[in-house]
Length: 324
Image 1 (spheres, rainbow, N blue to C red):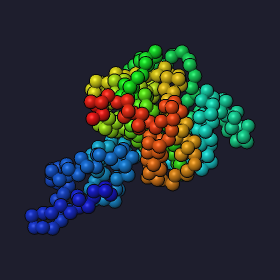
Image 2 (tube, helix red, strand yellow):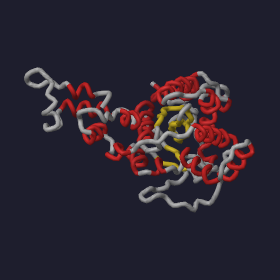
Image 3 (cartoon, helix red, strand yellow):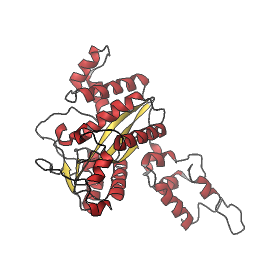
């Protein structure tokens, strides 16, 4: 495993040398447990990248130390054709401008621009990107097995202070030769982005990491609002919120107004940052988005905050005892 393989390669034996032959037979020692804990501190994508198929340590042990499932060994992502990536980026742009457009309308809009495409492919790409038409409709869908849908708690609620309500969502981020997913936790009152994470998959892990960072740095909100995505309805996610004594709120399915401030954040991120770049790697995307979110929180005026910045607005209205 690339980041800490050298530590495992050169554990000294009693004679002062490196003993590779005995390594696989002995029990997990304190040093191996330590490096395993260090490795697990990274995100899922980073831990997957640490798997080294040429290393002496057997692959099963590597995924065990990294806290990954064995299925990780057999998953090989296929590259997305450049033409398909271009269509996905355009769908993302059209979705921001016309959030009510479903696969049929998006197909027609794309055809109007000269793109030869069918509705089935548009629907497939939308699912891959994690987007759907946003409109108010009867909630006839059922939660996945074991996934509970929580009621929407914000209707008619006066949001008057920081950390009263946090919201979270996931958005598709195009890159030069691929794409990633961005999850962000936002303070509803101040619009401040409290934490964020990138991932190459839509597994729940990166959402949990973002929540844990936000709680560690800023305390606990009274209410946490999300949509009904499978990441947010999973027991792993809702259980973590309940364990912290946080009330869970979920949007009506397909109801964009229920999480409008996060939707506005995505629009700002896309038009002011993402669409102006062509990230060559996840690392470059992470570095550039880090700079943007710093600007967004500390320097960008927000008309909804009377031209003030989210970070100063957040701390100015924080109860004094907490802020201190």
